[in-house]
Image (cartoon, rainbow, N blue to C red; front, side):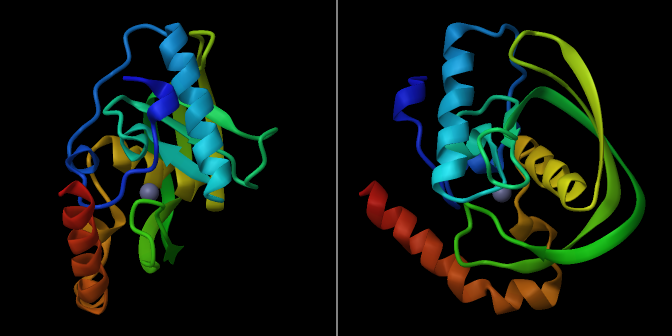
Length: 173
Ligand SMILES: [Zn+2]
């Protein structure tokens, strides 16, 4: 893994579809990876980015709910416990450009994760932030919004998914 070479991966890159591995040690490379992921997230105007989206199958995500560097935070080996009622809202994903779809998420979410100093911390959230945690955590399980959307949305987005598949094939060859 060369953190400097990490760039955004798009569906159907295989790394997006498989569970990410836990990080055993916060090495210099992990710190550089986190920095690179924050850069990618800010450059692409996202509010969150998970390891697989940077082409790395490790359990790490970064979130900045207002898209600023000051509020960007790193979550390593996160565990989440969503709670409260389900709310439906529009969601997009940097790995599925052009797709916005209604996704049900719990209104609240508690996340426990390790920071870059190796300390375990717990954070409560609700609303947009709770949604971001559930979305990024899904990435670490190999799950995308296309796997969560309803049947009607799946039909509506079928063409765009096919386009992304074709673009991926073209870029690979
Ligand atoms: Zn995403």
